[in-house]
Length: 496
Image 1 (cartoon, rainbow, N blue to C red):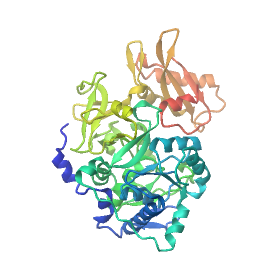
Image 2: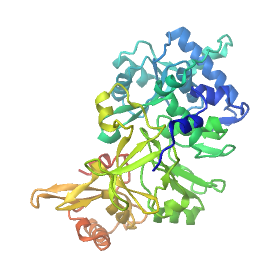
Image 3: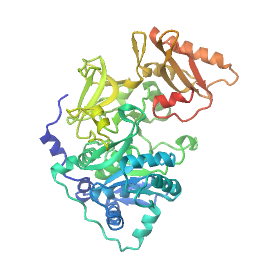
Image 4: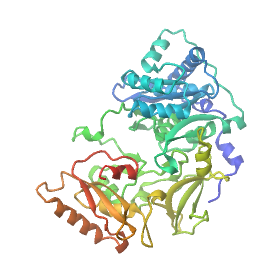
């Protein structure tokens, strides 16, 4: 696919800092952009968010001697003031790095060491574990909470900071945000480094939600999708995001809750079968549209309801995005063949922060990010996700993709959640398709023998797939439903 020229890309990006775009040149100063979903009286307009951002930036400069390149880590629950803290460091030339708060002090400390954080912002509920993590990581300053920041700002004497100005060349190479990912190597934690240019492109080009729309922000802020939508594009476009302090799941909400105002749901991070999308739409009248995006590569495909029903991820999201599918030797494959998707665009990250080895493995000299995801492209230009390269396994001479089997397995009425992996057989000297299943309690007869349940599921799958994909490795069943981890290898490990 032809990519926009550098001149065309520069025309798309009219400013040199994300602060200029979101605040200084934003004509929608009075637009309400962030609302506390639990306390709607608490909200931010563009103007109030800008003021709070620059005031906290001043605190960073005066109290913490903030310099260009210093890293501010944020480890807290969702909060509308989170966004001001996120932008404060970046506005004065620093870097901001959201960190997962739903983990141990040791894991948080590991993240802080990777990014070499100077200061950690948290909230009162997380202060103890955050303080322990900061101590383990030998941070130069004690943690500061949102509540303490509010106290500092409430006396009215804090002035606003002067935002840092950048040249066009500096814009392209100045780090702004760090977001953690396992990337193409699986469970090895790394921080993708996003430049000012990356952030500006997200805000300008990714019109996932049109201005004037009300949207619910239902993901922790340490995920990249929360940066790109409520923290960047939403501010630029004037979208009103209701921010949830996520401590419970939608599943715990009252069954009869009125969802009549909800028109569309965007999801990412996992595949959703067309049959599930259809059933949900028929029952609730709500369209779920899966979106293919990457922490390192940004939004890649422009999704639609029609594409989703066809099992397609869509087409590349703009002329500024170049996509190619390559085989194991780096050669581009032809339409219909399966290859690893590689992406080059102004949204592709600079690399992994302080990790040149991982960067050189995942980002090639032409600027393409090698995702580890396998796709095929149809003659009409539609792209179809096949699976993760690391999950592919061989049954004798057959290359098998777990998702092909999972899409059949999840259709069985007894199955609530599942994953498939290739488990090596010493007897047959090859990997065999093996299923790991969570039963749907409301649809599985509790008096039915587990052996019979396993037999019915196996016959269901084996009768719908070609011979090599049959579940020769067996089926492992977990009766009690639990939340699945994001990665397939983590999902399957609880059964082993």
